Length: 341
Image (cartoon, rainbow, N blue to C red; front, top):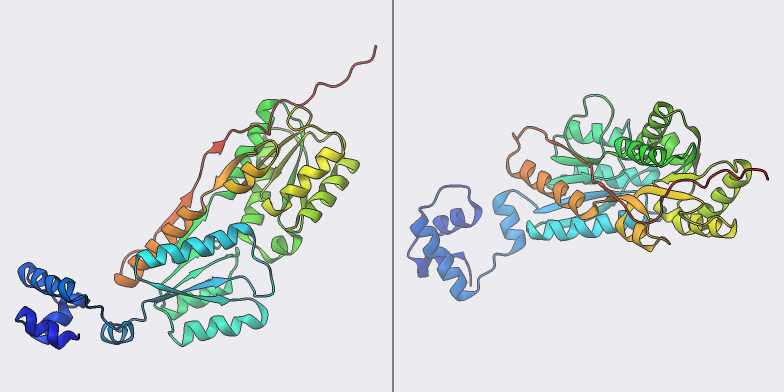
């Protein structure tokens, strides 16, 4: 079955069928319905390559992921899966392209070769040459995170600065006076990775506003590192009674370190953070947290990109997500200081 046969059965020209399928020119509603009825009757599906050639589009988007040698975190893996699912609902395919170091050649081939109709850029830094390159190329793109300054182009981000500050205020309202931030790895902070930088800014600003004693440390994205970092923190600063974290991979180790130190959560120690809901619910007891809305991030990003690809002149849009704190069972007032007899 081909377009010629569809045209014959519908009593229209081949070009009219092509216009009805591609939307390049207006076709009357009566004619369009007649064509669609014939298509439904015969089960016609246009060849993807032929349709792409006719439309001048690949119907494929690129998803720029961290370097291939770096293990993706659970949130990142979930985001990739959700982008693929959302793209499928827009009848788009997804090509993964690592970036960073030698992998930047893959990114450059994707951009300069016009192998995709648009790009979703993960792991955006405060100063990000990849975002600038995409802006120069004219290729539609949506960033997950935003750069400093005017932040041109479309982006979807999570308000890490505001959410971490909210976590600090929650602990301060409960009466905690000495708290710590367990951040992402030091290399992330050094490279200007947006969530790590903004989490630290939000933590410091809120702590200063509440006159708290604080410590901020970076931790590799591993449970064993989370245990070691927490153990060392408690040994060096025993007065700390609460932790704020955005490092979900470190949470199992953090939990072990608290348990082995004899600190019961939340009666003797409070933990709060900005993490994926799965990780918050796996913590014992369940973690009070701003749950990272992974599916919403992916859906918004794909939707914005599809809009930009279809209507290139659409003004850039910026979406900042601020999920509420889900109050679970990991925070409580700090233990009262022991008094002498």
